[in-house]
Every structure is written in C-alpha cells, then in structure tokens.
Image (cartoon, rainbow over the protein chains, first blue to last red):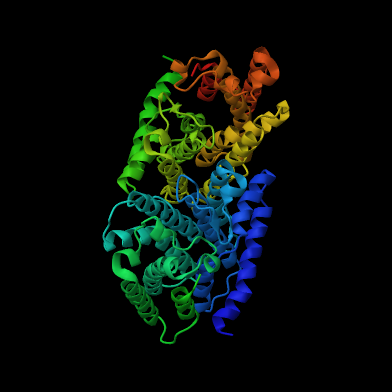
Length: 293
Length: 293
C-alpha cells in the first residue's frame, strides 16, 4: 500500500464524519438537512480536503481543525455540483453513481440545498476555534473569491456561454482555471494558511494548485472518452454527444494527454522549489493524473 | 417632509451607488455582472440597509462602512428573490415592476447570478477596513445563520413544504420568522454591532427586529389582497389564487391587521426600553406597517 493509500484511508472517513457532524448540528427543517446530506454523503474523491490535509502533512503541521476547513470546502464543491446538475444547467440524472439531488428532492429543494451548503460553509469558517481572527478572515475572503463570480461561478458562466460555439484552447483554459481550478487552488492555499507557511512556499503551492487543477480537468475530459459509465458513476461520452468544448475535442486525445502531462510536470516543478524530495503531494498529483474515475 | 423621508432620500442613492460600485469592481464575465446588477438595480425599498443605517443613527454613530455592510445584506436579499422567482420555486414573471431575472437572462444565469451575489456578500464583509476582525467575524457568522438553512433558506423550505396543506398560525409564523425575519433582524443587529452597542441594547433591538419583521410580512400578505398589481410591481392576488398560506387566509383580513398591529406595538415597546423618545426607527417601523407597496 502506498503512503497515499494509507493517508486517504485514514483521512477520508474523518472528512466524511466531519461533514455528517456539521450537517447534523444544523437547526433546520429535516428535509433540507436530508437533501444537503444526500449529496455530501454521495462520496466522491474528497480531492480538495485531501489536498488541504496533504499540504499540512508537507509542512509536518498537525492542525485540529484542518478537517473542518476541508469539510467547508467540500460543502462548496458539493453545492456547485448540485446546481450544475439542475435541468436548466447540465441536466444530469446521475452523479457518483447515484441519482442527482434534484432527481430525488425536486428542483426547488436542490436549489435550496445548494444555497444552504454554500451559506453554511462561510459560517463554518467564521466559527473556527483554533485559527486566528486574521487567518479566518483570509480564508473567508479567499474562499469567497475562489467560489464566486471571480472564480467558480464565473467559470460556470463562461462554460455555459461557450456552448455550441467553437472556442480556443486559451478560452477553454480560462473556463477551467475558474470553474474547477480556483477552488482546488484555494484548498491548497488554505492548507498553507493553516500551516503558517511563508510567502515563498505559498506562491509555490499556489502555482502547484494552478497546474494540478488544469491537469485534473484535462483528465476529466479524457475520462469522458476513455472511461465507462460504470467506472465514472456518471454518463460517459456525454461531452462528445453534446459537442462540448473539451481538451480532446480541441487538441485530439493525444494532444490533451500531452497538455495534461505538461501541467502535471509544471506542478511537480513548483513543488521541487520548496522540497527536494517527492512526498505525499507528489503522490496525490500523480493520482489526479492517473485516476480512472 | 418627515425625518424618515429626508433620511431615505439621502441614503437610498448611497446604497444604490455602493451596490453599483461593488458589482463594477468584480472581475467576472460581463453577462454575469449584468445579471447580478439587473436585480440589484431593480430598486426595491432597501428596507434592510435602511434599518442598519437607522440603528447607527439611533446611537448617533457615524460609520464609514455602514453602507457597505448594508449593500452586502441587500445582495443576500436580492439573491433570495432571484432564486425564489425561478420557475421551480414561485415561478414569478415580474418583480418590482420589471421582468424577473430568469425571464431576462434564463434560468441557468439567474441561478448563477444568485450564487454569485450570495458568495460575494461574504467577501464584502471579510474585506471591511474599519471594522475589527472580531466584529467582522461576528457579522459573517450571524449573516451565515440568518441567510442559511437555519434562517432564510430554511424558511423557504418550510414555505414550500406547507404548500397545498393547511397549517396553523404558529407554523406560518415559524416560516416567516425564518424566511424574512432572520435577515431583517440581522440587518438591525449588524447596525448594533457597528455601533458597538451593549448587550442590553442589542437584545432590545433584536426583539424590535423580530416583531417588525413579522409585521412586515403580515403587511405583505395584506397588500396581496388590498394592493394592485400596478402599485406592487408584482402580481396582486396571487396568494389567494394559489391558495397560499397567509395571515389573512388563516385569520381573516381583520385578524391579520390586528396581528400586524400587535407585532408593531411589541416592536415599539422594545424600542422604548432603550430610548424614551420616538425617533427614526419608530418612523421606519410605522412606514413598514403603513406602506402600500
């Protein structure tokens, strides 16, 4: 078993427990809590919290609330999936092998479950006990930027606007830097903030996040072609069927793989600026690029 | 001209300018900024920012960022209207006399404009310059609670769940305490935080907010019957047509007016605990109860 496997086997259950605990503690209508929990509990790779925890591991820092911050980020990620899956957006029926939120709870409740998760995540950060007020405010500010109109929400808008248009690779990159990259990079920077990393290390990790975020998205596009519906837990081949702008569509499958590998290598180079020896972050980066689901 | 009229004529343009300035400063796709701005610029009574400013006036405190905090709250209020108007929610075509956001920009963009406003509002609070870190965090925590599953979002869920059911007056009250009351009360408490009010004053103002929030909602229900589509800027009589649970439906029109006046009087009693003389907050409360739109 690799170090990464041990790491994820230890930490994913803790992230899951933290998410369940957070939702249980909310004083809200049961059906809303159920809808919020449904998509959180649908699993997923927990990539963002794992990156945050791996950054703390990189600095050999133990932080009692790292999982809590990771859970807040996972709430944002999950809300974005719930809203993206809606009929007026991507209209997806399945996610992670389960019916999407609106297929179970209806569109109205899915919208509200997403709104609830988004709003709650900021409350989670504001209530952290062992983080200084200034660091909490930095986390909140950066999460707002990464998740909002200047990041993830803006990227989703660009994605929608690009439908049924031919766009350039640069435009596709801008979409993904915002749509998936911004929040992934935030999870890495959040780890650096909790570890009290210096500016040099923060910059290197931010660059690492930038490139690994793009490699992650390119691999997503590749898996839509090379993966199966069963392994992915969502409909394979959907991008091609809907003539979506993807890296393989713009660069060919081989071209997409080259670009993915280039960003992977850039990410690793950033890590080497702050650590001469490969470690857990390297393993997680490699996993991102080689995953089959 | 009453003091309230002078006050609103001075402050509403400042609130509007602050909203425009905030949205202009966002680095996001133009169409998203346009959609976010469309509903913010549709006007409205700006009740929440006005209450916040009136609380500062009550304490005779000038605060350079009071309008900024008010704008953040107005963003939350506006996002909630955009999402509530969606076809899968209340399916409203008009709001404040203009087409609703999704009628102009489509459902997907309306969902994202709402998500963008909600997310941005937390960023606004995190970046305040002349508020202490602890006070900023208190504002963020309370806004998350008031706007989220434990407040506004939860209230909207209860409202949806109560459709086509007969509910009690207590259940209707719980809906409105959460759906509209929580954010209105937060705007009043936010003013008290910015004014560094003591615990006694905060409690009295919170009670004032609780009761005036309910009076506000009851008046909303009354106006659906007594108002015209033209004066309201939205379809009058819609609650009756859709057999919605309202105070007039449960208590008769006269009963609803009595309950509105009772909450109004309770609100005023709370104010008298901290000020012997009626002032701007009294005027604003009276305006809430006597408004015809």
